[in-house]
Image 1 (cartoon, rainbow, N blue to C red):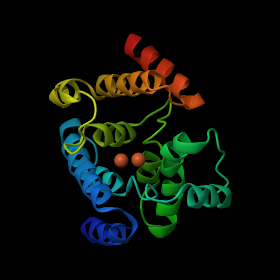
Image 2: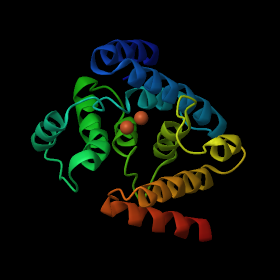
Image 3: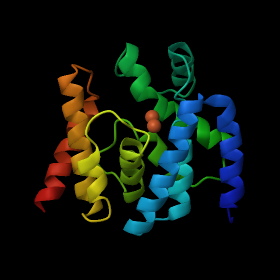
Image 4: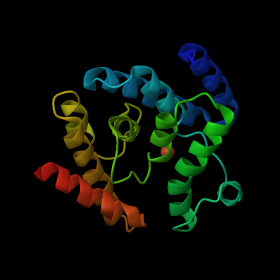
Length: 196
Ligand SMILES: [Fe+2]
Ligand SMILES: [Fe+2]
């Protein structure tokens, strides 16, 4: 079946207006734009990147209680609590909720949404693009993102992801934040890829 990407984008944006704060909606649009630009540069499906970027924070503005209820309903395993839980869980609950809301979206779009916080050891190009676009979109101001932004399109995508993930890990350690148990697997898999 042929998906009408523009109509889906418009429909998704309209629905997001009722789900997200003004800032979160602008961030989502910005991630979508950056993801589409990166997909074009790295030879990845631009429409998939555009819609995954737009929808990646579908559940970001839910309360902890709402997230927990959703996680229970979707049988998602909890690995942390408090602030860290919300920061990690919205990706997985959001991905499942988006799949139910937009049943025609391809599974790789859903997977990229699910992996945008904790990542995964076998990230696809689309997964990496959404992860990186979420970090470097122009509305983000925390941290020094200039070194990352300036190498987009100039270095291989694997390397760009490694540098982004390195920054996330450093940030989590410095702030004494919870690290998802799978993150170490992701890090080791990046290092192994870099060596081969
Ligand atoms: Fe997010
Ligand atoms: Fe985000």
